[in-house]
Each structure stands twice: as structure tokens, then as C-alpha cells.
Length: 502
Ligand SMILES: [Zn+2]
Image (cartoon, rainbow, N blue to C red; front, side):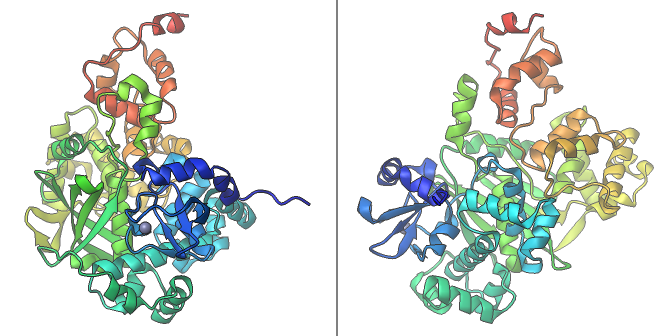
């Protein structure tokens, strides 16, 4: 019987094309494949600055996990753990997307692969097949590679003791960490630490990391977007530095602290500083930063699909969030008011009900009130902050639905269904639900057809016609929405008159 080709086989059938991308150090392929080099036993990112290996020594892999399974060790120079992840839509299969999200959140540290499959509503076999097809590795292998790479990052970039590194990377015990590290990397952790060289010291008492992205990246627009919406006490934008508070709940413990994110454009990466209070949840904090800054996006694909709409800002990113409830609350507060007003409401709520950080930093002093807190409020109390009664009731309804387990705001599997469920809550209309999908779930294909500014861009067209026009931008309609907001000069192409008249 003929063996079905694996994803690695398929990739190596494109050997020439991938080798050309490798030789050119083409940044748009960073994180999309890894190359194992037989002469050294090392695997690299396509952007590695080391001399390009001979073609006959290269084997290509769809994930770091697949390269490790084939016996390759990660390169200490290009550091595979710094590569951007795959854009959501890249992982064509939504099950794979949510499974990866859950694995990166540490789900498999406390659950079995079977439980992960149940969580997704599919069979264990189906889940394994999806992973083999997408990553060339099983969910367990994927999780182990992820943990090891996080540990490698912590060894290279921090002075944390080994036991802390093991814990923060998601290993149950130091022994397990040492064993797997030695088996996969054929190195002991302390040796890696000593060869990693001196790492960057934080100006404060925090930890410093780096996260890669695929250029171009439109930093002025990202910072402009965040600055216009900054919530006093929670966020602070100073030049090209973004500061904010963050809380991560892991294993029943809430870790609170702050982060600071700053682009290093010449190296296509961001510098991230996080407070030492978050050291045990570094992996999750970095994952959320990737989501907030849309670091896994593949701009070349988006620009290809959006054409002239994206031409003037090819590096535009979709701002995400670090806390889905906070983002949902801010979407509700933004209903029918200006961006500035929405930020004012959120700032007042923070001042009144926000939790003070034990170790504040500069202007970052509080956490936005969480769902448990908002669920206990009465609409009249929120009205004292200037928030309209109906909107206050909607906000409380969202918080209560989350607390009572009726509403899922994290790891939403079926986006359409999730949007529908949101709109069953009082005061949550289509705009709010779609905006939550766009920002809190980082869904790339939401089109805000009912948005005031979007309607202005299509003079004389009915919402249905606008929606039909936007079909051409699938599966990147969230990015189309952002471009339309920014791009005042854009006008629909004239041919649409013909196709939209019925
Ligand atoms: Zn390398």
C-alpha cells in the first residue's frame, strides 16, 4: 500500500522554492517553515543570519515541533522561539487554531489529549489527524516543543533559577524538564544558559524578552490607535512605548503586574519588558502581547487580498487585546459615542472600581475591573460615571453571563455562533458583537457594515450592498474595516454600480 505523503513530504516537494526563500532570508516566511540542516543537526528560521547551508543538507518542516521530532536541535543564533506564529487564518482549520491557543495557554499541562479533543467537540483521532496535517506533529509533541522553546527563552533571557524556568515553561517538575531538555536538545539547561551570553538587563526590576514579526509593520498607526483609546491608570502610551497593567489567572492563582512593549524596527521584533511579579506566567503574557499587537499576521497575504485598499498602509495590523472581558466592556462603552468618550468611561470605571497594582509603574497603577466586580454593580452606580443606563445594563449583563458560565469570551470555537450568542444579551447589537469578535477574539474576517464611518465610505449604498461589496475582501474583512476607517481618500470602484443594482 502506498503511504500517504506527510506535510513534511509535501514541503520538501517544494524544496526549490523554500530553498530560494531561505537563501534570500525572506522575512515573510519567518515562522511559516523551519529548516533542518543535516550537516549540523540544527534547525533554523528562514531568516537565520548564519551562512546558508547547502541545498542537499536542508530538510523543511512546517513547525518547530516537526523539526525537533526529526532529531534537530534549535539554533542558538536565530532562536526559533522568537519566530512569529502562524496567522489565525493560516491554520485553515479552526479546531487547530483553538487547540493551539489552548496548548499555548498550558491546557495540556493539566489535561490529557483526549480531554482537549472533548473540549473541542471532536474525537481524539480527528484531533491527531488535524495536527499531523497542519504541523507534522501530535498535540503532545507540539506542546512539548512549545514548552521547551519557552524554557530555552527563559534560560537565555533571564536569571530565573532553573526550578522557576521549569515551572514558568509549564513543566510539572524540574526532573521532567531536565529529562526532556536533555533528550531533545542533547544539552543540559545550565550549559545552554552559559552559552547564551549576556542578556539585556531591564531598566526596572522587570524581565526583558523579544518577539519577532513579519515586516512591514505600521507602528505609527498602531500606536495612534492605542493612544486614542488609552484608559487612564490601565494604559499609557509614551512615544513608541506602550505600557499597561495585566492579570493572568493560572492554576487558581492570579498574577498581576505590568508590561511595556517597544518596537525594534531594524530587527523586525518588539522588545517586551514584564514585571517580575509575572515571571511565572511569562509564556501566557507573551502570547497575549502577540495577540494584542497582531505579531503573527502575514501582511503580504493581506495586502494581496485587499489590493488598492491596503496599498497606502501595507503594514496595518489588527489591534487585539490582553483581556477579553475588558475588551468586551470597552466595546459596550463605545456604543454610539466617540472613541474619546468611550476611553473616558473606561477610565472612570477604573478609577472607581479598578484593582490597584501592588507594584505600580509610572502611570500604570490599576487593573480594569473584572467580570466578577462588574457583575455585582447596579446600572445606577455606573450611571454616576456618566454611562447611559441602557449601556450600563448591557455591560452588567455581559459580566453576569460570563460569571454564570453562560457566555464564553475566551477560546471561542465557532465565531459566528459566538457573535449570535452575544446578540442574545440585552443591549448587545450586531455592531458590538462583531467588534468584540474583531478585537477580543482577533477574528480577521469581521466586516462592520453598520459602522457609521464605514457607511460614509460607500455613499448612496445600502448596508446590504456594502456587505456584498466587502465579500471581495474575505477572509481579511477586519483588516478591510481598519483600512476603511483610516483611508479617507478611498472610494468604491465604479463597476459596483452595475453589480449592486437589482
Ligand atoms: Zn539559525
